[in-house]
Image (cartoon, rainbow, N blue to C red; front, side, top):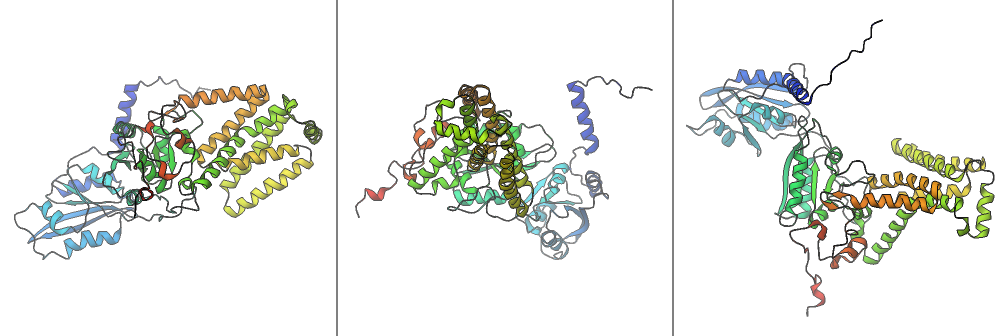
Length: 533
C-alpha cells in the first residue's frame, strides 16, 4: 500500500506572500478606475459581488433625466443593510419623478447630481470603483451613471439594531443607566453627548484587510498626551489580519503581553466611565459591532473600581472600597491559607478549633489540598454552567449544585464541612470583583496559590506571591507601568488612586498618564465656601 502522505517542502516567506497575493487577485477583482461606460462598471459589480448567485445584493437599473437628456444609471445596495424607503426617497424619486425640474446649465453631470438632485446629507464622490463597492457591505448605496468617471457612495444605512439599554454586566443603583450597543455612531454619540466639548476628537480607522471594520479613536485634544494617541493609532493601523469583528478581538491584537493572566486594556459598556477616562487623559477605542469600548492605558487599580464609586458619598464609598479590597484578598488567599495552616502551621490555630477541624475531617479519605481542589473545580463547573444555560434553569442549577450536592458530599464524607465553608466564601468574594476579565485572573491565580500552599505552606504562598508581583511590576500598558501609582512611586496623587477621596479634592489628572493639562479643576473648586453673599 502506497503512503498517501507526501513530503511537501516548506514554503518560504516571500513565496507565501506571492501565493497569498495571487489568491486575493483571483478571489477579488483588481482595483480599477470608474469607467465612463456604464456597462463596464456593471460587469465589475457583477463580478465583485458574485451576481446573480448573491441573493441579497440588489442591482437596479433606471434612467436619469437632466433637462432633455436621459442617462443610463444603476445603483447597488445590500438588502437588509440599506434602508429601502430611503433609497426610494433619496435616489429613485429625485431622478425619476423630478425629471422636469430646473437644473443648472453648463455644469458637470456629477455636480448637478450631488448639488441639485440628491437630497442626502452624506455623499462621497470616488474615482476608484473598488472602494465604492466596499461601501455597499456597510449598508451604503453605490450609484453609477453613464458618462461619469466617478461613482457615488450614498449613506442610506438602515439595518436593524439593538437600542440603547441598561448595561448588562456593569449595573449600578446610582448614576446613568445608559449602555453602549453595537452601532458605532450611536456609541460615539453617547460619548459626545456627555462630554460636550469641541476638543473631543473621533478619528476613524479601518480594522482588518477584508472586514474593514469601522472604528473610532476618541481623545480630548489639549488633554491627552499626543504620544499616547500616536501609539494607539500605530497599533491599530498595523494589524495585518483579514478580519476583526469586535473590540474584544482588537484587544488581543494590541495588548502588550498576551501570556500574563491579567487584562491590560479596560473594556466597559458604560458611556459615563469612558467619558471620565477621556477627561483624565486616556484614549478610548470604539469598534462597530461591539457594545464594549476599550480604554487605554489601564492600570491594576482601574480594574478594582466601579462606576458607582464616584456617585456615592465619601463615607459610603470608603466603606464599599474596604469591603471590595477585603473580598479580593479572601478570594485569592482563603483556600491557600486554609491548606497551609492545616498542613504546615497547626500551631497557629487554637487547640479547641484544631480539634474541631480534625474531628470534621477524620472520615474524609482525601488530603486537604485534594479536597479543596475538588470543591474549587466543582464550584467553577457550577458557575460556568449557570452562565451558559437559560436564566430560569441557571437559578435552579445554582440551588441544586450549591446546596443539594454540597450537603450530599458532606454526608458522604467526601469533603469536610469546613472545606465547603472556605470554598463558599472564596466563590462569594469572587463575585464582588467589578471587572469580568479581572475576575478570571483571580480564578486562575487562586489555583497557583493553592498548589504553592500545598508544597511549602506559607513559604510556598510567598513564593507564588513574589513571582506574581514581579510579573505585575514588569508589565506596561501602552507605555504606562501597570502598577502605577503604587510602583514606581513617582506620583503626587497616590492616595487618591489607592483610596477614595471626595470628588472636590481631585484637582489633578493622573500624572502617570503624562497629560498635556495636569489640572481638571481648580485648587478650590467649592468657591461658595469662601465667598461672601
